[in-house]
Image (cartoon, rainbow, N blue to C red; front, side, top):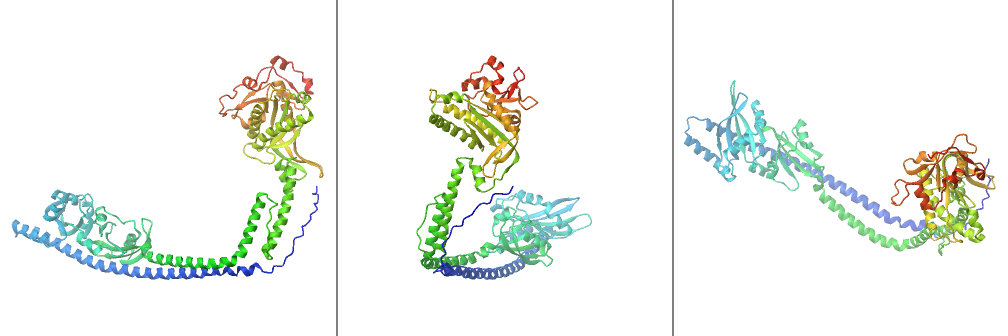
Length: 639
């Protein structure tokens, strides 16, 4: 069916030609131009300064590694030579023990880095110490015993196995030691069945002086396994700091040239610029690195200073711009205030404005819009008094069409018991006042559970859940609304009990199933409601509260959707007019999770609490003709 056309009337808006266009005032955008241009200059200056700093740091890194590498190589050659000389002295048979002792003291007094030198025989897959000498002064000063030195070497036999292949190796032997120590292993002599190697322990203090921190640059001497062998911090050596996972050390292993530089992310997650140089002697490498944030720290400081200067310039510019922009911002702020008031529903709020530009035109349009919104809100408010606010909103937005849609919904009916007898004792005005007070409480319960009031039929209420707005379990919402009505009615009855203010009881019936929901009527007179067998059965169920001595009855379809949530009691089966099969209904006693300790546990307790008098004999002899044969009881046993 075609929609009925609606006549539209357009309000006449004032046509004003701006005398001072707002575009002229926006020339003050030069402030933003200042920010943009200065920002580009700062960014470019920072970029080129960083680039220059990076180049200089890379060059310095490479230079340091080259020079340090050459010096370290010379030092290692001297130490290796000294170790071999001491080993030859220990092997010399023509020299007496006293002379060897004298030569040893002279050797160590000369300031050598050696702490201990021993000749080890490799035979039958075992190392055996043949002879050794030690720097007694160093040992005594550092409280080291001969056992400590030998134990240090023995615990590192696996590390010096490479020496058996004819290679000079150097390792960090500080593990378990009281002082930082390096282990130098040198091939000595070899025959068919055995091999001798020289094992020397070195004090890395002198060697580490070559690796003192130079400004921001930090240098290391590392072995091929990544262990730090020389560093400006002795604790780094003593704790066997390992850089094996460092991308710089991994680059050293794979680089064919043996020197170079790389920018990498360290294992600490920070960005570094590093350089390296391999040392052929003992397969070592000198590396240097610098934290990128440190080398760019001054760059960032300059950048910050430039930003501060920019901020000062902006502040000065803003003060000037403010004087010119005041004529724009003040009217806009007034319009903003007016818009906020309109959003709050204060449609009568207006502002006086003498602007002859676009802002003035906008003010006139806002006034016209506010007037239209005020008229629409009044219509909506008036409509909402007669129909549900949700339905009113749909109607105002033209989203309700003639016809209906099939939906699964909860249908609720309630009725005041003995309302006719109560009305006879009251004047019409008192009846209206009483009904308004009662219905307000009941409607609130429906609204709080996201239900829709379908209609009022005298003192009866028809409501639905699931027809328009669906929130959570609509069936549970409907039963909760009935329980809230029960509680509200108990509180409502507390100050009642006189002839003019009698206590009242109600009956509620709920059913769940398919309905047709929509606008029913003509194009000129429509009513949003639900129809279907589900509605009819809900009405029949509500009427059963009187003979059953209950206040809330639900069908089996309702219980199936909320099973385990409510304490219910199965009632006698009924046969409803128009239905072949008997219908099973249940009385709702309370929610299982109700925290109230006084909540009824049985139907008898509920009747006592509500003041419902129930006579079993009278119930069994109830005259069904009074109910127009809408139902009949078909079994006599309790369910």
